[in-house]
Length: 218
Image (cartoon, rainbow, N blue to C red):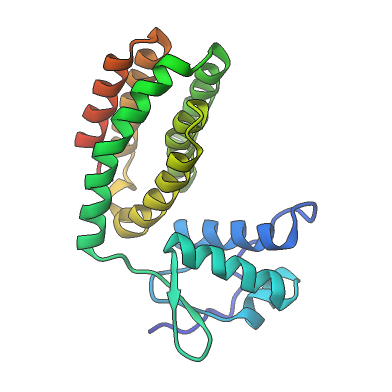
């Protein structure tokens, strides 16, 4: 098991963010971006020192990340960055394949123009990140895209579940989507989903989402 890295790999967020939320967001970003590798042990004192907060918000952030599955319990009251098994990822893929096309169908029937515009803005940011060679930023936009659809459909619980699923799969397949070609294919799929959603045709939206999930690396 890897020990906690002494250098400040966790980047602090703006002070206006509440302490527990700031710690959570900084840790989640560091985990998903690979700055905290699977198996890395984290302690309350070290994280608190890096972010300039007390142990209480760190403990609260750990609890939330444990609930999301991104951290697991470790020895000596520490937590460890998760390393999802292939069996877990296969189960997540199965659930996403079943759920996200249904969500897309409902979203096509409920979304308004502003929601579609927001998805198009996300895709502008996605392609800029790809052109800049920033794979992590592109995958962050990918998360935003898949979360905006259930939220726009008023399906908050579904959005929470998808956020958890995507966090775990990003840990497992980080390297398989790091090349520009894979990211461009994802972006092209997203454009097709947007057009289906904008048409208001629920069946077309479901089919576009299903096709995307079938070909996406995660």
